[in-house]
Image 1 (cartoon, rainbow, N blue to C red):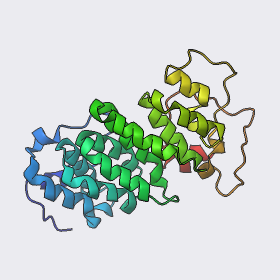
Image 2 (tube, one colour; image 1 turned 90 degrees about the vertical axis):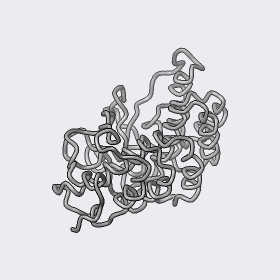
Image 3 (tube, rainbow, N blue to C red; image 1 turned 45 degrees about the vertical axis):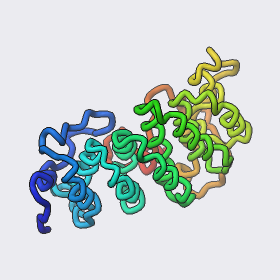
Image 4 (spheres, one colour; image 1 turned 180 degrees about the horizontal axis):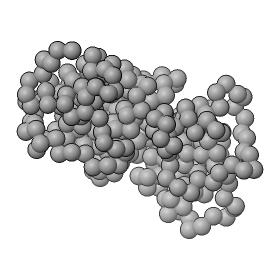
Length: 277
């Protein structure tokens, strides 16, 4: 594989694999370490779009260059990279690192990414699994940039108000609105729950959401069991009917995204490993 990237961008090809699970961990300060600036953005975009790098063996340091490059683009607040970054959801739709890392990348780029993310959500096929993690991009931007919170809430509420039967997407939309403390969206959220089109295994039931939003201090009803078994993607082609086993776990720990690495350490996505149990 020829190395046709100029220094210092070419040094990303030697950074190699992450030493630990990247979720929530601080990123290196690539700009200081490498002396990167806005002039390097075109080459960084080339790296994230380089199919040779995308298809390289994971034990080859070069295979990890796109990940380091998109982090650099985030740290550079590279608005020119917004469209190429979104396209990775489609071209690398089986890569768990895309939905895990893109929300933070767009958080760094900031409000300039909101219109493109909104359009991408509007045009996203209903069958595309990556649709489930797009709400988090808006959530992260809204939390990090308070001046854009209202715009992010408005878009998320608009999508939830479509009242589709996509219970997983609705769950992620409600989750993002809950994290943004979107009390102004409570009527839409309540209606979605009334229609029974929100996956409570992701976000909890309506009382959980109302508590999160500060609209109630405690539950009026017993806390239900939250089971991943109700989610269509966890149940293959079985009929879409609710089922809760008496021994189903109650979620009281950190939420695990369906595309996140399985905590058992298998290296598989959660949805294709323990999440299928």
